[in-house]
Structures are given as C-alpha cells and as structure tokens.
Amino acid sequence: MDRDNQIVRIKKILTEWNPLEDSTEKFPDLDNYDIEANDIYFNLEIDIDFPTKNHHLKKVKNMIQEVIEGAFMIEVNDKKCEAAAIKINEILKEI
Image (tube, rainbow, N blue to C red; front, side, top):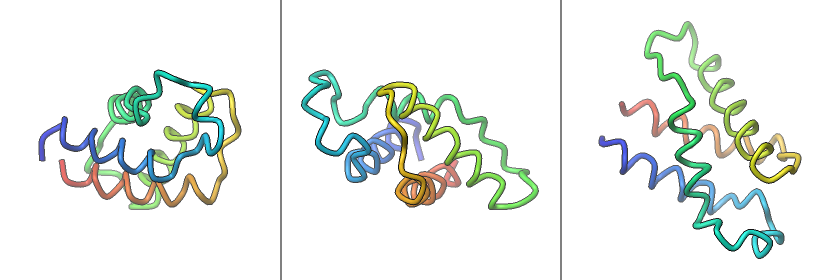
C-alpha cells in the first residue's frame, strides 16, 4: 500500500474519532486532521521486528497522544485514543 493512501486512511480515522469534539470550529485550517495524520505517520518508526504486537500498539498510541495533545493543547481521552491507535496500527502493518 502506498504512503499517501495510508495517510488518507489515518486522516479518516482521526476525523471519525474527532478528538477536538465541539472545538473544531476554533481551527479553520484543520483540514480533517491532515497535518496530524502526516505527523503521526512520519514520526512513527515502523519496525516490523518489534518483540510484541502490544509494544508496537503502545508506540502508536503514544505518538497519537503526543501529536494531538501538542497540536491542540488538549488532553486526549485514553480509551478513545486506544481505539484509534488499534485502527492506525492495522494500517501501518500493511507496509
């Protein structure tokens, strides 16, 4: 799967999750979390040889939280972030 397609799919997951909830109107240049999806994708070091699936999932979850919290100065809901991380982790496995 090509990188652009994966980033589009990550954007879709972030948009469906919508961690900003009702605050999206405060960010007119949000563009369905385009920058955040790219940041998450490019900041993750994809290593096929991780010792366990959960270790990689934890890294994905931590990167999502770091990017979203840093971009919008909000605290990310842990359970909702985990649901998004599971989906994004599946996309990243396709590399």
